Amino acid sequence: DTGVSQDPRHKITKRGQNVTFRCDPISEHNRLYWYRQTLGQGPEFLTYFQNEAQLEKSRLLSDRFSAERPKGSFSTLEIQRTEQGDSAMYLCASSLTQGIYNEQFFGPGTRLTVL
Amino acid sequence: AQTVTQSQPEMSVQEAETVTLSCTYDTSESDYYLFWYKQPPSRQMILVIRQEAYKQQNATENRFSVNFQKAAKSFSLKISDSQLGDAAMYFCACRYGGSQGNLIFGKGTKLSVKP
Image (cartoon, rainbow over all chains, first blue to last red):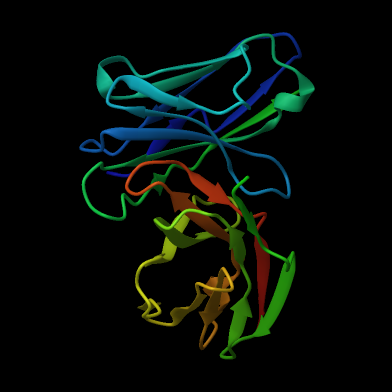
């Protein structure tokens, strides 16, 4: 499978616990994006990387959230001290820099439930 | 603020018929790209069709076409000869700022296809 993959697909945790999600982009893609999608809403941008550099962060990304992309390959998104409001689908997407469209290819998402 | 609005939370179409999903956007930028994404139940989001703002010609991809009205800031999706597999959430999205930047999504329209 050469698409974007995410792990785990589902995560249930108790409030206050830390969770970490992983995203593996399409191998030649140098851009990687994280979005959050809550029920009944469209995806909302969280942050994006070009290679290993984190170039933009949304105001939605509170200080409990941190994202990394070591070596410009896979990325991790960590949420510390989870809250019930963090329950959502977390989507990862990747794209190339070149080309006018820079089409973003999405992974299947990680569904987080905070009890 | 840059926004994308989908005013139809749900739509229904008979198999083999045509349906149009509405989308409006608000931006003061001149350089942007518009997209329609499809998100089937429990499956990952895939790109349906895309349009550059500077192109007057409406994009077409097989049974999918758009009606891009730049002055009205409208970008509707027409699905012809609807099939059962077209049933999904459809999201309109906009990317500003040339080749960089995240996607801004609407809230989505849930399309049902009746046999």
